[in-house]
Length: 208
Ligand SMILES: [Zn+2]
Image (cartoon, rainbow, N blue to C red; front, top):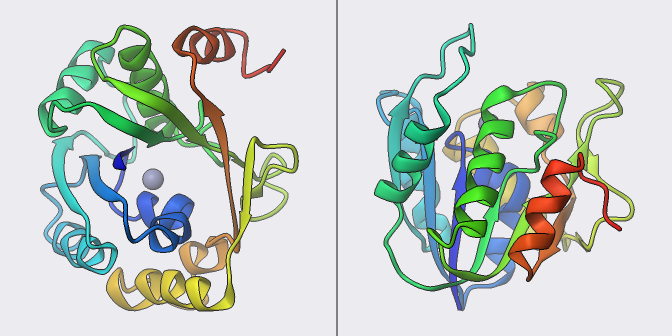
């Protein structure tokens, strides 16, 4: 099973899909992060996290400043295609078009770009999953969406490793947002039909 995980930042792969990756050691995983390849702190931590997942990966250096200036969609797509080995994937996993929490533009942009690349067959994959989390409009830490296509409560062993990657590999403090947010249940919207994913994106994520 060849799997590509395409995220905005180093740590998104762990936060939103880390337990799922750890639960499938037979998957051949490639993780692409479009930002922070030039972050002297985060970039080496990403490499270390990939070792725990037995995954390959690559990072780019698209803008991730506090202003969150919108990215050019074409440049973002080209960056993703440049990072990703051009093979046929069984599964591509990326952000939800809602961005998991309120409000992260980079997550939203990556989601749209990947869904469009898949729909245009510039990325070939049998299936596409997007993360499925929400924060109740900032009311709580992001949690799995109840009626998502796939919901996987993590075993304590798997959750412990995921937690350890966040705290010890990425070095986030135990009382910080990142570790507290680390979901114990992972959830995804799953698609096998590129048109369906595209329509879902354009209709504001309403599944018919
Ligand atoms: Zn992120």
